[in-house]
Image (tube, rainbow, N blue to C red; front, side, top):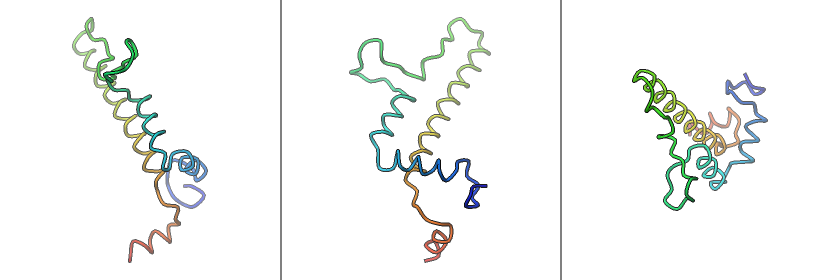
Length: 107
């Protein structure tokens, strides 16, 4: 449990850092997504285009090993996507106590 009794994985201090860094900063969030989950871009310089969906070389692998590698890559991509979405969600949460949240939810 946190100092305020919640069961979040991050502390109030860490949440404050997230909010101060990312709240209302869509450009930074887009940059983070671009760095951690790059997609094919038509105007990227030659050799600097990365597609995470195509980064596992499976040509010389046995089918079972290739499938394991593909599934692992897919899970990593999904995890990164989830973390980036969580950063955005946490950064935009309102600064309110549990009592205030309960009060607003019963209006």
